Length: 207
Image (cartoon, rainbow, N blue to C red; front, side, top):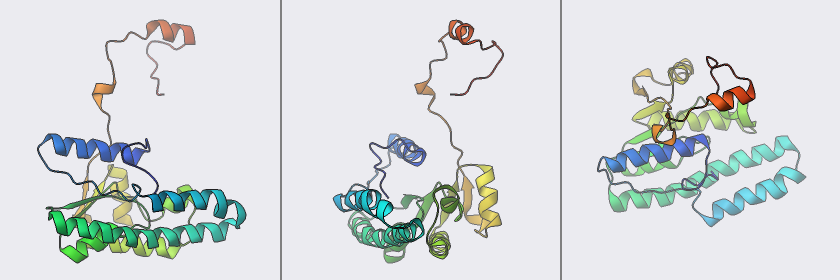
């Protein structure tokens, strides 16, 4: 995983920051353990993008990428497991990333329940980014969903897809994606700009 929670604007990091922020505001103690917050992770991503991706045929390159992601997740699992043993949290909350086994391994090793947020079907990675190790994607997804106590879907549609794929229905809860209303000023009058752009008052505009 190459996304840093503190700086990236990808949807899953925005969601993770929001959820952790709310939990902290409610008085819960949060211990951050980020796979991307590591020079080894950043170096691996840089090497793949600048060397492997450019010089090696794509089918081989993406397979190497996917296998490396599993290997790195197992390396990260050691750090996560040590942190769990040190702080003894009530739960491990992990944002789902394809090919990642860190939370699953740490939960197995320590007995602390695993909650996986933003869970997607196993085929989503292949559909969006291409997958070189399809069987590995399915097997790691199965391992994670089997170990987890709670699996969180971001919509009813995702929940239905997960159930169709065989994920146990009783484990899945839905916490919909949303917005932070503090980012929006509802008192701003957009009439002048609508007129300038030729947008009728009753037309909905999504940017």
